[in-house]
Length: 149
Image (cartoon, rainbow, N blue to C red; front, side, top):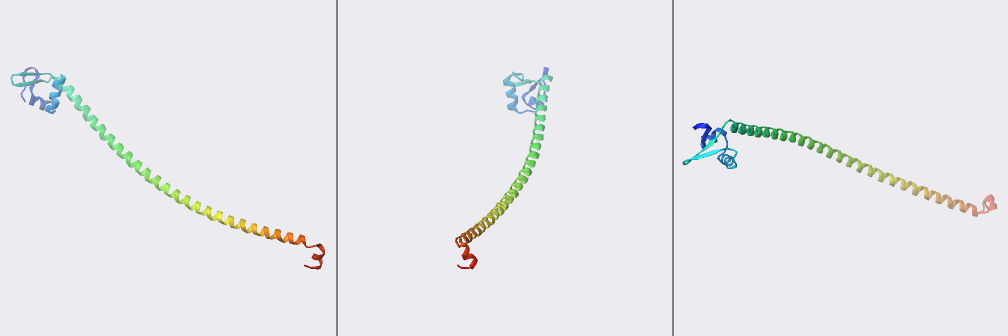
């Protein structure tokens, strides 16, 4: 790596020193974040401790962000798995309750049918007894005593 006086590096050496792409380097040069000078056909980039520190700080920040992203992804995967299990459990409970509801509904229908049958039987019995009572009232006292019809 060739270094000139006062921390000036060739473009290729600057790329190696900062471990960045050519496009990123030129972007930083064009935005004024990194100073450069063109001498003849060659461009030299000024890299001092401050530029290195800033670059390392950005690099560390990116690495921390990547680590945080990985941790977040792992946490989200765990949460997704947990919620999938919860959903499966709840679906099973809903299916069981639907089965119980259908069974209870069927039992209620049968009970209602039995109730209707009992009511109809009692109604018929009451009507028959009322008819017998009315027939008994229409027969006079003497006819009942002497058994005359």
